[in-house]
Image (cartoon, rainbow, N blue to C red; front, side, top):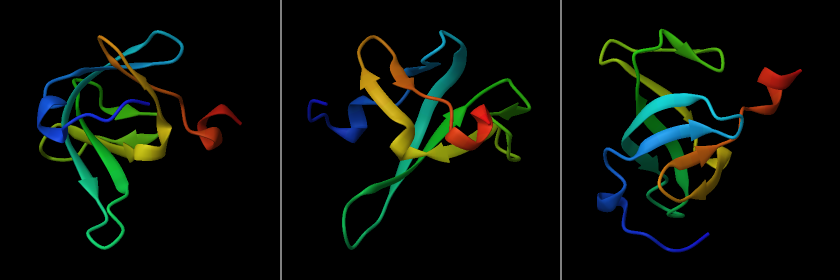
Length: 84
């Protein structure tokens, strides 16, 4: 995947690999020591995404390792445990 600035990702539409529109990327969290991305904070109208419930701010937090690609949308795959 190409290198991008986190500030350019805010408000990027998020879609699953099966074509489901999930919402918009609100923020990302990262590990301050290693610099690795931890979570995607997705603003959504859905009450839950892949079994993760919406918080009081209307966001669902999903692991950042679900990222597949970035084009017009941020494409993520469903978590393995969701597919079982």
